[in-house]
Length: 383
Image 1 (tube, helix red, strand yellow):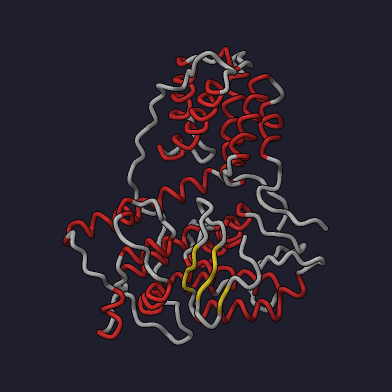
Image 2 (image 1 turned 90 degrees about the vertical axis):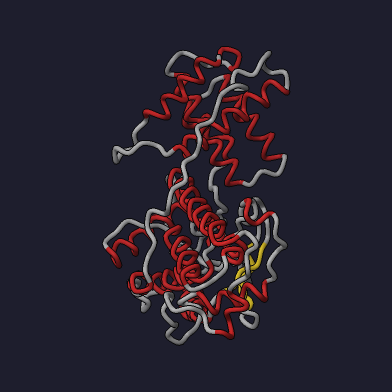
């Protein structure tokens, strides 16, 4: 059985499959091939393929099938269409999502003009919406997080896998595509760290992982994974029911069901990312350590500081994350004791007001990530 790496389909075929063959679809596919050759991640290429397919289909409905026929007023009407569009549940697209649909449009027509496929760029003056700053949709309390983690039936191979997987999400706050891409050997038990390879922006990083999560992963490796693996073993840590990779979209639905069963509310993989970050902040972690753990290398608040060492980050994680140890952890509302306070908090030269701004920016960035992830969900195979 062949191994599947997400995205499962060749993204350059998506435009034709969704929008139908046309000169514009052919141009979009050529653009996707060009950015793929420049080193754009498979996830970025796949998402741009989806958004461009939507544009090509929208233009085809209006009789536009060639790149040279596209004008600035057409693209402005398309932008208004995105603004007025409603999802199946009746809610509008967030401004952040509208931006993610329009950025590939600007990239496509800029590339077409640069490669002399069209005489001028109709998207050059297209103004992008301003993204709003929003708080996360759902952040679990400690008791709620434990209730969700307790839902899987760990006596079953898939239930044990799901418990171990959610423990990793909760402990490390990694993104969904980062956890499904974890390889065997990614976790260093002795150091209490986990290697995230080719995360967002194709950056490698190390993150702390708690003893409890390591214990559940060890149990999964001993009791469950051998019953799921199908030779030849590709070395992926978490496997689907058929021995294949787990797709990010399926993982979102899977975790969402567990969150609903444990709390009665809607959630996703990002719920654990939000929760871990928030609980560590409430536990006394300095925001710079939390940003380093989340892999937010482009946040303006991290650009002026040197990179946090993994040893110091691990100490903060152990001190501030309520699920970091096998023993019952202190309440996150309790300040870190004197032994860990010097590590968990780094004095800020910006003052208390700036610290509050940084925290709001961090939470807003997490909410924006969740919006982008939710809108990027699509169909996938069984897992």
